[in-house]
Length: 268
Image 1: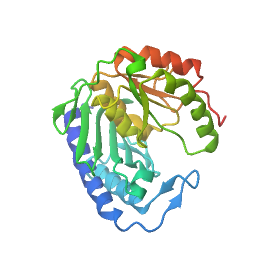
Image 2: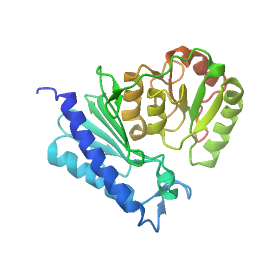
Image 3: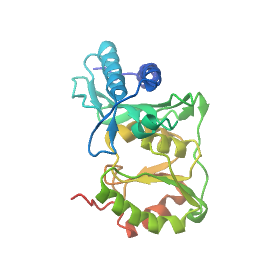
Image 4: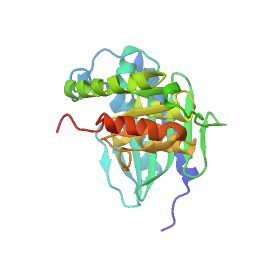
């Protein structure tokens, strides 16, 4: 079987992200109710479901044999070796409250490797995208992470989980990180945090508890912008820990997080 063209996959992902983003924007004014996922502070709206349905239907119409993994429950292994990892609204709480930091995220894997990714912030009309080996862009302009080399001068982003036990553990890690960096930022959308590293808006980002749909596209975009990505102790990025930063501060932040035992699972 001929491997699919990553640029063609990116083009489809871009079209689908724009359509899903437009749908979510149009539905925002009609928000009146929500139900919960893992806890009362983790909301899921009708817009999440509608946006994911649009994405899944679009993927199946264009590439019916591909697999899909979506935050709102879509799961299909497919038969082609291609899998679409989609988050219809990353930053749902921001979306619910009318904060502008939310995005549609689509990563496309071929045989387990992400080869194309799109993260669209519809409010800001910012489209972050990347193809494996082809660099990363924001609205067509090439992206580069910062050249930071001093952790003490690095603006660092992070995020927090919904479970109170995880928040307690993450707060303890912040006590170690905050004095060691320029300052901390919390945006509330992991995909956009990774894109912020790519765009040089922050020097580094770390977070425990991200799911595949939170990081699939963003990790590729950050890496293609020159950022170094990983987990802790030589592991790959995962639910346990995602770390992305300018190469010059990766080791220092990594070692600080290891010392803080930042990838320990408080829910285990």
